[in-house]
Length: 184
Image 1: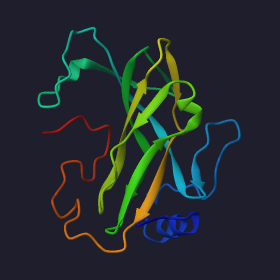
Image 2: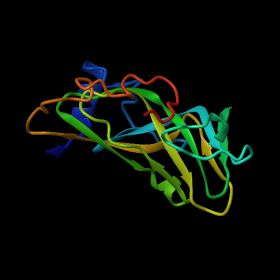
Image 3: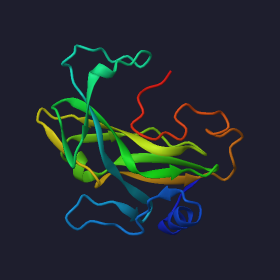
Image 4: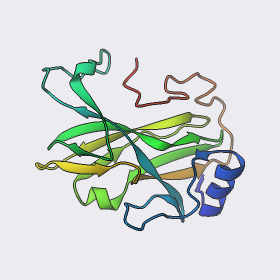
């Protein structure tokens, strides 16, 4: 299994619609950078956010998720409260090839501000908009900017095709459209 280069990512994005919309180069003037890099793709966060709040005294339970535990915001930037959490979605839609697995890592600009991004791997043949988990680990409010880079996706291609892909097993987050909440 090896990491894939900018050439491979560009080819897959343009010929196979692996990433749409696709930015063929790093865009960085006046924004937190996004687009194609040497060995990855910096995705953008959309302007849709779900910010967790304790105003309703809800309990976070992945088996019985209470939608009162967050407020929905659509904005050009959002403030994530101290020691809190937000969900968002990517601008880009992804279609992962059957022999590829991705890993997501946060961008250093946000990491240096105490913003940690978590995304589970995109499994072979998964497709959809990415639900992004954004944690503010600081005791201060933190701003996140919509339509700018948030994290980098690294693509790893296996030397053999998997026996059963995410699409084959009808994964519960297949072809997700918006910010998708936990499912059982």
